[in-house]
Image (cartoon, helix red, strand yellow):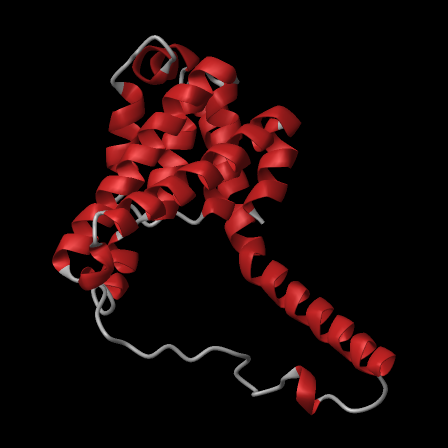
Length: 204
């Protein structure tokens, strides 16, 4: 969903950069934490997966292709449900973006969040982490802010910080992670958001 929205608002190049950087950093941070022995910082919990209705491939009836068709119909139904769930967030983001476009001076945004302000990227990462940001809401806003002079790296740092960690998310993670792992997780999100932001300013 994020890649599709980024493609629509920022184009192919920015989307590819975002996808590659976030993938590489996620793998790198995982390897670093693994090598540092953070396995002991994960609490013993049991996780159960699957659909709420308990439907699995084995429970579908008919031939192989009949089962495939049933699976496709279920997938489309679930996809529409997902779209319906994020639609209002997209609409909210578009509305906020329209307000920013019409009423916030371009010079103000360029001065405080332009590419020339080196502190803007880490500050955006830091501000984004405690915020609860729906990425579907933030990306339309980001498109308008960038058009008003906000550096691409600042917006990506804010999006990654908010999407990677938030107060509700960290609260849930405390049920499976110990304190040391929580701190490492937040440090990882901040680092990835900041580094990616600077790279974005240079590339995009």
